[in-house]
Length: 115
Image (tube, rainbow, N blue to C red; front, side, top):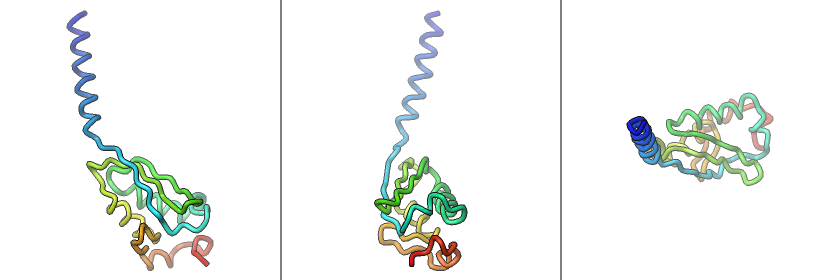
């Protein structure tokens, strides 16, 4: 019984030390979001999600239309803030001063374009 206890304790210790190596980080990116429609829109919202989740290491993203930000939780060992900003810009959204891709922006639905 003691051997099983020590074996399980050792396995759990290794698992926690590997988990501790992951650097889960948060970033808020100021983005060109003009309304809360991106959260509901089948094309533009999905395009943004696909771009951000396409960055290796991204765990979660949330759009805050009120503050015009995109909150992203990611593993800093696998992704950088610049990679996240570039992915957002590639989807057509401005991201912390980085201009969104104009060609992609033109493909957006009219409901999502700024007036």
